[in-house]
Length: 231
Image 1: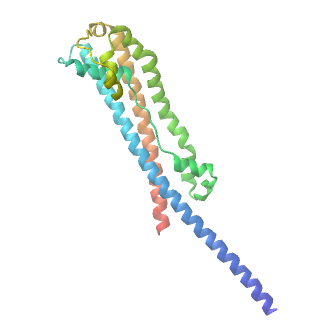
Image 2 (image 1 turned 90 degrees about the vertical axis):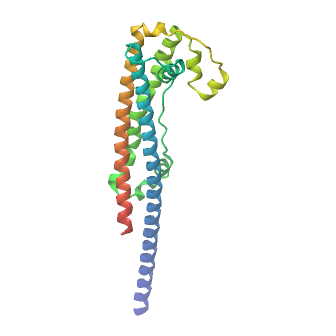
């Protein structure tokens, strides 16, 4: 009987050791996932900040063009005007965010290893949050390609403007000396298009700021979780 009890106890002890070791490995793996996610979302926040800055620069260029259109601004050099026109009528920004760690976690089925339910829910909802901001970038790109660029091309010679929209284009397209911009300064449609560009950029900034708030919340939860596991 004593030998039987000893055998049973040794088996139970072995199971307990195995279970404890598995739990230790899971917690270590969870921590590795959390550290990877933290790095990824910190990079995401930096890219969102860069995107917001880019949208603000587009607004600044558009507002300066409106000032010129109203003749309320001092005279600018031709190349300065061309840079503004290039930004507003030919360029836009797109938001590309890293998602390798988050995607790998869901693709592998290891998301359950994250024991914080709030964080799991945040990570699950993340693609839909990003989609809202990306949608605004897409609307701006569509407006540029289908409305802004065709309009400007129908009104003035755009060689100098186009060459400033891309570094390679600047190398390949020679500059011309003189362009008459009166056709756009005297056209109300110019003001309408530029004003609408400002509106779209404002919407994009709003969505990017919401996205940054979501990122800040995720980062805070991850950092709190890592702190908790260190104790």
